[in-house]
Image (cartoon, rainbow, N blue to C red; front, side, top):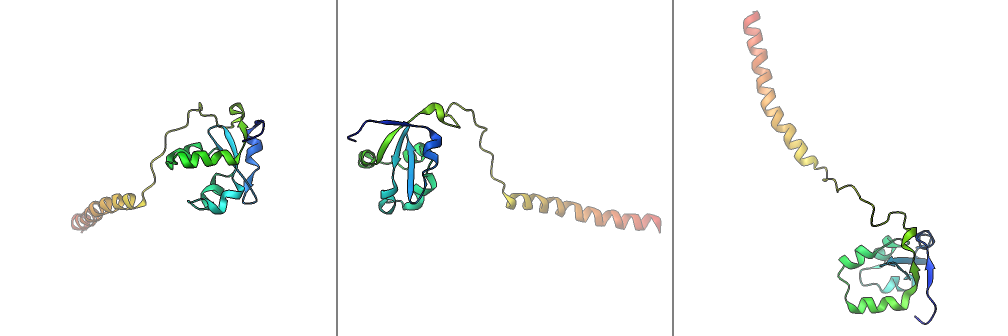
Length: 132
């Protein structure tokens, strides 16, 4: 690292969100990964999607090994003050909503129609029989 650590806010890091100026936050530390975009094994899109944001969860989920963690040192720019996080980890988020599956909905509608259409035809037939 070779220099004194600076403290940044989440909002300060958030403005560094382009391919010309790309910072990410991992475990409350800010990293300027602009010069690593072309070399990132997962492609620059992965880093740009996380640009200016906290990418801790994504970094851990990707299963980065010790080599990747050591590489972070060369991109380190400073600590990020957790109290400036607009969505702190302690915030209780709503549970994930199930995805809307239009196939299942159409299947349900079809089942209902298969029942109602014949019943409707029968009702019309019975109506004609009794009123004629």
